Length: 288
Image (cartoon, rainbow, N blue to C red; front, side, top):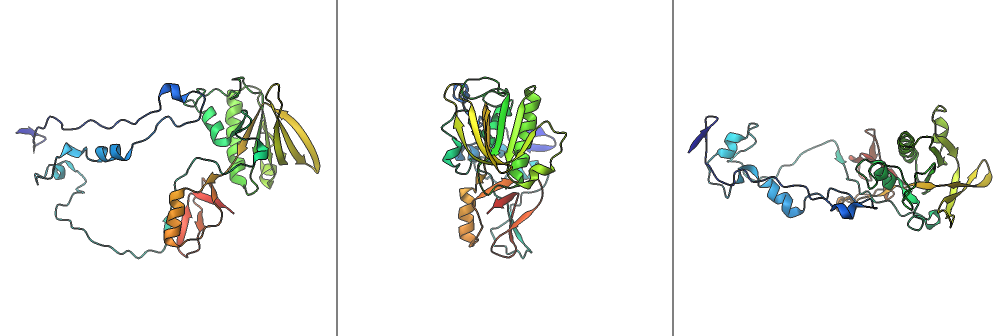
C-alpha cells in the first residue's frame, strides 16, 4: 500500500491509462479539399475514454473513486428510478450539419471550380484550412482581386447577408485592394454602413456562367430593373444548412411540425415555436 494525500491508493501499473488522442486526417489527404482535419472519437474510443477514471477493472467497493471525487458526485447506494418533471417549456438545441442545402444548378456549384459555398470559403480563410489561410482560387492557386458574394436560395434572410459581410471583411484584411461585391435582394443591404469597403448590391442573381479561358465567372443579375452581367475571379454562394437528420427523427417521435428544412445559426437567444405549445427550438432561425 502507498499513502498519497492521506488516502490509500492501490498501485496498479496501468493507473492511469493513457488518454485517447483525437484522430486526424493524414497530411496528404488534407490538400486541396475542405475536409475536417480532426475526425473525432469513434464510439469505441469514446467508451474507452469514459472508462479511464482510475482504470477500475470492476467495482470492488474500495471507495477510491469516492475519495478522488471532490464534488461528491458518486453515491454507492443510488438505485435506478423514473423521475417525472413538470416544466414550463422544453427547448431543443440541435447540432449543425455543415452541408449546404441543395443549390440550384444554374449557379454552377460543383461544375465550376471557382464557385464555392460560404462554408468552403470559411475554410479557405482559416489558418488551418487547405491553403494555410491564403485567399487563393481553387482552380489555379491565384490570388483573386474580385470576389462576388451572393445568395442562391429564394428563402434566405438577413443572417446569410451578415455571414457574407463578415467573410468579405476578413478576406479584405488578407488581400490588399480586394474588391468584394455582395449581391443580396433583401432590404438589409441598404442598412449597412457606407464607410465599409464592400460593394453592396441590392440585386437578384439569376445564375452564373464560366469563361472558358481563364475560368473566371460571370454573374447574371437584375439590378434597378435592368439585367446585367459582371465578371469576377471567384463566387461565394451563401447557402443554408440542412436540418440534422437526428433532429428530424426526434421531431417525428415527438409529433412536432417544423416548417422548412433549412436553418441559419443565430447570435441571439431567439426561440422558434413548433406545433406543440411549450416545445421550442433554440440556436437556429428556421427558414420557411
